[in-house]
Amino acid sequence: MSDKYDLVVIGAGSGGVRAARMAAATGARVAVLENRYLGGTCVNVGCVPKKLFVYASEFSHAFHDASGFGHTVPQTHFDWPTLKTNKDNEINRLNGIYNNLLDGSGVEIIHASGHIASADTVIAGDRRLTTERILIATGGWPNMPDFPGSEHCINSNDVFALEHFPASVVVIGGGYIATEFAGIFHGLGADTTLNYRGDLILRGFDREVREYITAQMTASGIHFLCNTDISSVELLPDGRRRCHFSDGSSRDADTVLCATGRNPNTEGLGLQALGVQLRKDGSIVADDHFATSVPGIWALGDVIGTPALTPVAIEQAMCFVNQQFGDDSRLMDYDQIPTAIFTQPPIGTLGLSEEDACEQYPQDIDIYRSEFRALKHTLSGSAERTLMKLVVRRSDDRVLGVHMVSEAAGEIIQSLAVAVRMGATKADFDRTLPVHPTAAEEFVTMRSPSRSY
Image (cartoon, rainbow, N blue to C red; front, side, top):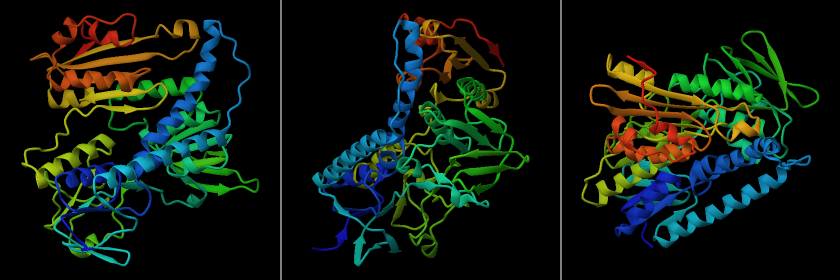
């Protein structure tokens, strides 16, 4: 068999698999290289297993809420091995699906690392693959901060392979991965502390949302240590870890999770020797057609520093295939990407934050805001509250941003994203009849601005 291809994809994550499949569907000869697991981060150590763990952690809230509705819930017991085994079975099932999708599309799957020898040659084990196009889709890998005792910590990948569930956890970090895992551990019964070196978690998101979710998580029982950094981790004789912080305080825990972001996974590819331009963080510089600084080599997904979201990588792959094997009519649009953070309660966000809107359109912004206790919690006894807000450009009534902290936030924000993408105005929201009683109806019943800039 000839080892000459039209496209060799390095990395079988969401973007790489979609690019390989769609390119093969055009008649191209395609190979995809993967040295770990099919489906990449999302399927194996990201979106899918994490959401399954979120579901598992939410049952404790449901059990607590049930008494207000007349249900007597007996003493419950959470069994970590059962959850872990069932999660593993589901991930194995998805791995098989990805394998069948690639195989059924005619893509050759090569279980090996890829080293790029030249702009048209990839070394995979003892094979030398010649190709017209090389696509790098190797994603990211958890960042582990460098401090004394970091070897006693786990990263976000390791959580899914824990043999025993810890009674206490310190989560280091303040991004969406850290906040989601803090909610998971807390919901499953661990005494949970979140340590963030800044003053407020979820940097880059709408500030009011950040403040609101911090208050909600604190009220639920999660401990916050902000404005102090991890200095060292000490392994104690009983196997526990003692975290020492820059403000002189310390805290003991069974497990310390470092969830301080992910780095572009570019090591070992041979990029520097080839002259592929990289940023300081290791991400690859790519243009609108995903071309790198070296002709013949392209890159997409988390590895190029664009929003690290599965749907982004998949859409980039579709654009790439259209550009290379189609009519070259598609460019990636990064505006108004809907996002959900599966904290507890979850966050849904779309478009501009209040701060960014005011900076971009000074003296032209109205904020519509509603905060309330959801109907469910009038009986559940839960202190959880809901926040919803619209960011509107006053001069043309255009909705620029939608933000919420609420149950089902991800489901609601997905639907609203369609309207906002179509250019919906505040008047369009006002003319829409509400579905009652729901939380989402607040988005179409807010009539007066809460504040204007």
